[in-house]
Structure formats: C-alpha cells, structure tokens
Image (cartoon, rainbow, N blue to C red; front, side, top):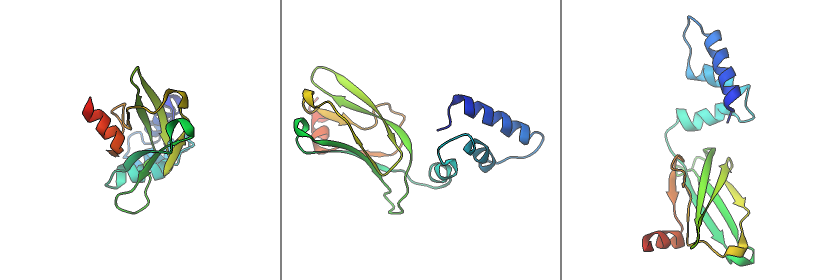
Length: 149
C-alpha cells in the first residue's frame, strides 16, 4: 500500500513528530497517507477500526476455452457496502502443474486474463498464499476437485 521506502520514511517522520509525546494510530495513518496513492484513512477504517471481513468468491462464467470470464469478487456480509482492499494469490490447479496468479482486489470485483489453451483447471483456490483475510467461498467445481484429491 505504501512501499518499503515510503513506509520507512513515514515512520521516521512519525517518530520525529511525536518524540517525547503521545501519538495515536490515526496520527501514523495521516503521515503514511501522504506517501501513498491508496486512501489509507479508508483502508484503516475498514481493516482496523471496524469489525468484519469480506466474503470472497471466484466465479468462472462460460466455457473456459471459449471466452469464459474469471472474476474475483468481494462483498460485505453485513450489507454495508464496505470493501477490504488486499492482495490475493489465486492457485489454478491443472493436472500437470499449479499456476499462481497475484490479484489486487481493491474494488468489488476484478476480471482476470487467463490461458484458455490449457482448459479449465481442476480447482481454483482464492487464498493460496495463506496470508489473505476473509471468508473464502469455493465454487462447486473447485470444492469437488479438492475433495476428490
């Protein structure tokens, strides 16, 4: 969200600004926000200041080799329209290899390019890196493929 160098510079400013005084999380976010293209105040509100987590799904529509779309979406299970920007890693499991695809999920949904020459994967795991946060719902085909082994 900020980048390593900008984060380090922001922390230096934060520590210099509040040396020998009290500081808060919003103070840090205000300083880092000036170094990021992301609205860190909005990010902090949804990730830190409020309870909840997104429901994340991957949907494949159409025939995989004939122009199907692969869409990753998130929604607020409380119906408040909140979005949780985060980096995901999808795992597409084919018979001969697994393919990992990084996804920047910063909107309600994102549609991805895919290799249609390989056919449809046996299953798709939406939180393959294990560091993603949310409730991840597998599509029926992926669930069946994972259970089959």
